Length: 443
Image (cartoon, helix red, strand yellow):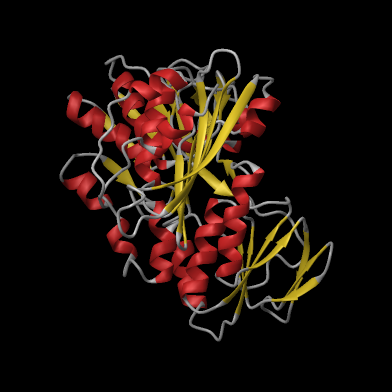
């Protein structure tokens, strides 16, 4: 069987490895638009900050490894421009020599990921304006930082924006975040986001909230950024306002798209067209709490969906069980964790909900060096089924969010959360874990 995979990162190569490990006799060709295979995109901010000393450390397996060890025809600089679903061919340009190519397939996996959204702002082509998605993006930023950079502007207060604001501040730059909404990290409820704002201000991050970017100006390189409320001097700009699935090349194939232009797939990662699969950031994910399709592009989902797609391509049937919306980020001295849906989302979905918010500590309150945690638990007003959780604090956020993610995956109630037998010793926890303390407040 001829199997073609478009995209050589998390989803695509997870699928390729499952095919190699669970079947024989197939001809596997991977077409990667860029020049690097299988790397940890989430580590890029830490390379820029210097915490990780090389982009090479982010690469899980090289093109040569896939070719020589696993027998995968892993190609680079191969951009697919068209899929002919009737004749089962893909065609495009090999940018290493600018020659066209056309290949036939028996089964096709689309794992093309996403690209950063960069609006058509005036002056956006000036040098010194960047987005961050790939290793070449990170290298360009690192190279540009060798100049006399004092003022850095981050557009967007989501996860990438916060991570990069921290990165630039740690490098000694004066950092401004411009966010068109009235809060940073809008996946958190407003009162929880205030802790993020306070931490930003403690770290001398300048916040420009409720402002929309209009244009950039400068001589050859960016020098000023103009919003609807003012103009600010800047030496470097990082745009982090969101991403868009790389699916425009699929026009005319009959493949159905869904949320945000992401490819509609079923639990087997099959698209609406026979023998074409999709996985990762370019595909939708079923949200178990919302009970509807969603688009949450994260490496965890991409790897899982890729594995499942690879198995189904070789007729080993397995289904993707969906997501609950779990994520976590380090922001200076805070850890920001959330899972499920927020109170804002519950109201938009017309789900009757209530919430409880508590202050607690990561370990026993009497034990030295305990760290404050603020925890919000969202639950169904009538059934008391847990809908989501948000935790912001120092240590111990990660393990509580993971417990809550497990609770959500298994559709547990606040009473069932209280029944969980969680680990306790004063250096690690209080006799009642903070998430159980919150559940005890539910009436």
